[in-house]
Length: 308
Image (cartoon, rainbow, N blue to C red):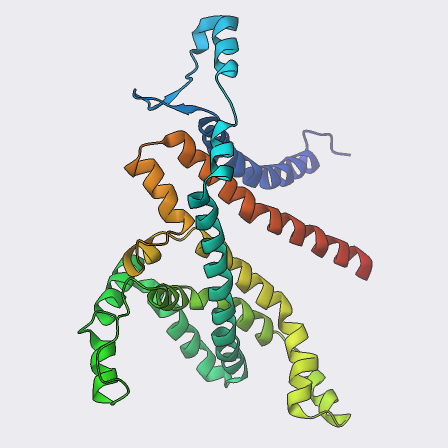
């Protein structure tokens, strides 16, 4: 019989190490940076280097720790709650994220459905066409849309040639340009999870529905759509979370009259050099995104337990 130092003990340590590595990764690259940002959010702006107070002197003993803790406060969070600039930025970011995700779902579901129903020999080609934009730099693709959406850009030239408009409309620095850039950029994140779910669907369920006299459109709503919900939820989460904090697309394609929270965060950090307020904005944004995920995970766990 092998002891703890034998082959069985080595396997146990190997399993523990495999489980421990992701937790160490999260602690090093998520928890520790979050604690640093959270500490900055409790500080105050100062004309110094670094541009905030208080700072901790580890060798100062108990008095240094006392003064350090006494200098922390939630004043920056009160400022966020009392200033309409920050509240409007959060609301605008959430509204644009939800609207963009709805557009992505309307466009992405038919594309994923067509890919899943295509012949096997074509599915690989279609998959590569969806992934192909990732081979080009994200920033270059956004700059390309700036060229397309200019007043004398390709889009307006095409509309004029087709006789759809008499004068070139304005696209840049509008919410329409933001939605175009977001939908184009994040479409693969919606299509691929839905495609992965539909591709694994058992086609015999549709055949059984047809044998029972169910029309195709009804079988689609009663069989295909419910089975595709896990992919829809995964794609929606993959889209809505980064869109809320999006900075590049609204900054390059949108206007400066109404800012999203990513632009507000950048402005506070690099423009005003107010690191404490910028950190508070980041902490609130993180809470805004993490709380729904935790609630969803809890509901999913309860559903799995109820299905057992």
